[in-house]
Image 1 (cartoon, protein in one colour):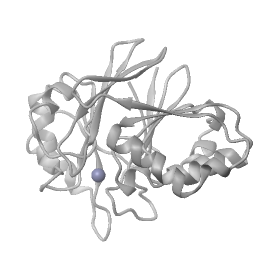
Image 2 (tube, protein in one colour):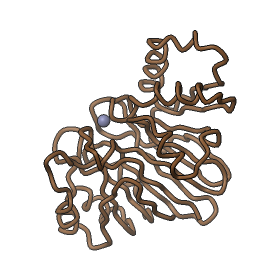
Image 3 (cartoon, helix red, strand yellow):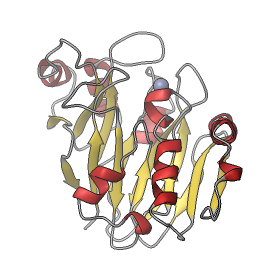
Image 4 (cartoon, rainbow, N blue to C red):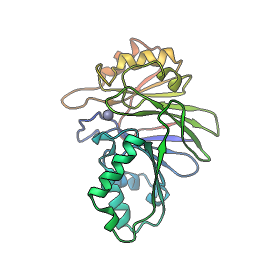
Length: 251
Ligand SMILES: [Zn+2]
């Protein structure tokens, strides 16, 4: 059984209980980290996942709440004496900037640094990102402020599908991203340019025939997010959950 472990559930403004949205995919082989708004190694350690086993990281787009933990995580890994490689996947726009960000930290002067490689994902829908023994992961372009990709993740062992919209306002290609997904994890930052409301998340879940809907990347600052579940239920009849940090879902 594969599972997703939520490491953060908040939109760009986090609080003490809700880190920025990022998560781990865990199958029988190695874990995969999706986004890195803060250094996740403390949480990963607490979950009993070895940081050496983490060798694949997908970055959805270059906004601070999705990538600003990368330099600190890499330094942390280096100071632990890591030798294992790390592969970073993302669109050109994101990967180029992550490389530049690391150059600002002069990482080329950090001695005995472990191997880090960058893998540029094609800027198109259904673009292959990575495949291992557990998962086949493809990217879809979303409508956000900068080039951004959502993910369709297939569990190769049982055929189940987890779809993650990432940050986006509703656009037709999301139907393919989310089609018949067993779990649709949809952002719910609020209706407006580049984002979606919980009701819009429900609309996609209905149109795409998703089996369940999980709301993530929602507002938490001086706001109670719980009513988002009822809002999504106005447009979707299936089960709706509000993702919380450290939740785990099997698929
Ligand atoms: Zn964003």
